[in-house]
Image (cartoon, rainbow, N blue to C red; front, side):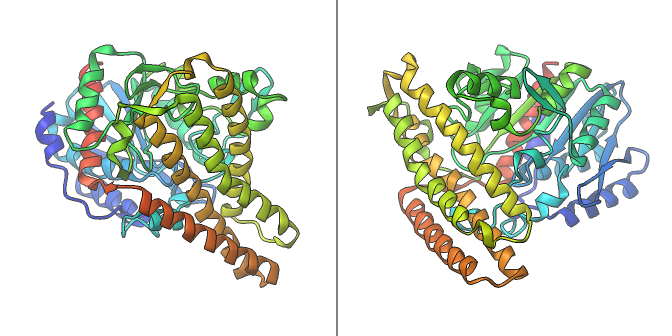
Length: 448
């Protein structure tokens, strides 16, 4: 594969494509290159929209790429937009070994609810104010069936059923679940362990001016292969962590199922890659200098700071619960996330207070991750809370709900302004993000 030219030819995208634009492009591709591209219906979304997969090439080994596993993560959709056209036109890239199976958007319903920020301005405030991420039990990535200890999740949503059908039918050699983060630095999840690729994977990120995420791992239970390279996580590890550090059944706290990784392993045990990239970064995310705080102190203070936001929202929604009569994706997501964060923070605090490895000094990256990046992600829930109350007011005018909305808007504006002032962030060009995700995939394929 001529990886360098394939990656460098990525266009200078200035916005993220909408679901309608992605669908129209896929239609054009299939009609323009009918010999190379076949469009296959693999399922329908929860709202009944067709979910199509583009099959490109005819090699014996199957590759599966799917984007928008969470609908606030459209970088992968842009990566697959470019890759699908390039594959149809580039016989050398297609090769004879693989059939490339591409799903540009596995969750069209949720992705549409993020389109308010797809065209910019690309700021922390605008992103958070137009953000949507489903409750865990409505996520395509985390509702695969599983039975583990007393966790029994057997109700995959339609989007997940579409992925299950594709994975079971293809028995893929490689699966690329195209996630991305929001703020921080770049990092990877990988299966299986492949030490020979770690340096190149890190170089792919750094060569495009994006820092590595060298603070705290996204999940306290993450298995680290190498700096900024982790083992693909599973719900089993989440369960075991909660079981160790909280009381009661972890199944009640998880409230969802397994991942595509866990399902695919039982089908064909494919190689798997996740490339987590942010839209915004602050160089402090890779500052490995020692700080004046211990790692334990940084984690515990981070929990306290983020609970200022989640505690406020929990109390406010509890106070108007009797006035909320409509059901919306936003309200469902906020309710679910507040419960999950509460459980997660309880476990995180217990872990931080007892884990001996946290006694030593925290790096500046770890302090930044705990004290500022954590607040960024909690702000996103605040933005969804505003949208939930706006939806309610469209259905029914209630003074108590209108007052609650004013309080949440005031808090959102205050917290957003604080972050805008405290963060020294830059916006990463979409072209660079697509180049990284694409180059990382080609790197793994070169080592299969």
